[in-house]
Image (cartoon, rainbow, N blue to C red; front, side, top):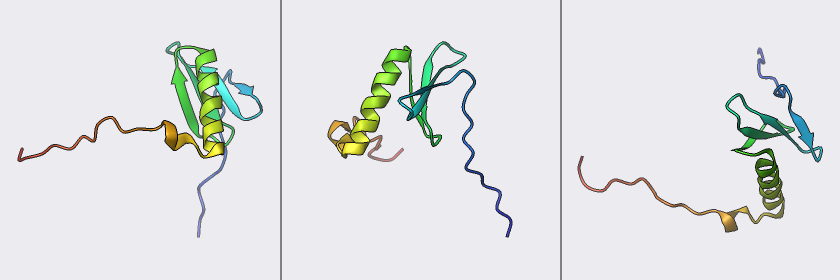
Length: 83
């Protein structure tokens, strides 16, 4: 059996490690993105400070188990009747 999957995380060029937990970097479109050290993409936003703050908050809520308290579904996308 040949195993081809790797657990290697590719860190974007110019990424800065924040709190030894996640990376933040500027994208080529002038936005900023974050990613955990394990490679899970998190936030994208207009300012570095904004995505850093929201990524910290999101990870804290995941750790506390309170993220569902701040989550809601706005629309279900269900179309009734025949099309």
